[in-house]
Image (tube, rainbow, N blue to C red):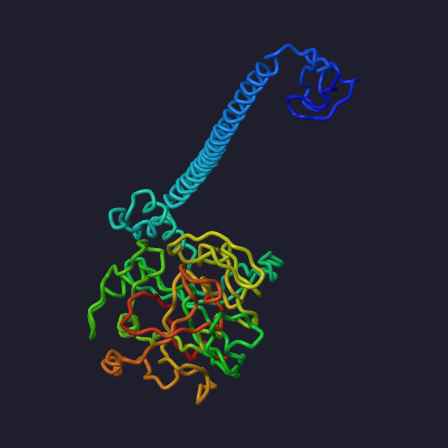
Length: 453
């Protein structure tokens, strides 16, 4: 008598006590007597066939289970995608609701301003409102025209108050205070004015220290640091706007034709862009001849002195820049700052509602600003210590022909709406062909004798 020692399915060893089911696979062992001699002939072959069929069924079920898992996985992926789309649509809907609320608020504000302007003291200002058909976009034109009138109502010679903001190395606001400066207002005609801020004289350190973060491959263009003394002068509170450009460009031609509407981004209160250095020179001289004062581009020493306004940090607001305070490419950061928005266009001058300590707006970003100086690769070899233009002709009417024939590359400052934040620093300088029409500018003027200290 031979004892059966293995389960016919999983071949697990078992004993006489396991006569009902296998302890591993659970197979029914009751049909199997322990005495092989008592098993009917042919029974084993029949069971083997039944076991083989069961294995095939099990393998098929495993294959179908795997297929089902793949299908479930695909469905889950599609479900996740649909969920993301729903979330995105929800965010868009909420954003549209917010835009609608903002638009309604702007409309209410405009209506209030119009009611205010309808009063007798403001009737004369209403005559200076730009025609809506001169401004692209009816709604944006109405808003812009109203803002232009409101700005004219607030302008006036004398002192004005502004906000000064300071941030820490992470771009978090640490202080906000009020500053005060004096300005003079030039009437350019047709209701267009030009506000010029009195920049006090002083001494500062020009350039950037080695500790200041620059960029990979920095070529030393901001060195060596050196002391410069600046005499008081007048500088535009904002970059020249398209309204100001159009008005002066309509004055009689001197040497060069000027496009009345050169800018890529359209708007009377936007900074003029797409202006070459030659265009800016012609514009300044036309203005000088009409007003009877010496209007010009700033020297780069004057520009940096005015931009810093007594600060020594990379930006006049502090160690970094944020898109809450300036218009630049917010996909990039400076120092320990954070990423922000990227408007991909210029913004109205003064939109960020804060200035540096001298009362100048839009120093960092928005539009690159031409300076008068020809390019020098660094400050070695005779950089003026008194703020004058370095080896350049003065921007006078009698020098206009020679200025327009110069081919030296020129300095631009301040960065723009498409710049990395590091290119918006007070010390950053770049060289550009004077015929390149991609930039804007800010004007300067000598301080009248009556206002000199």
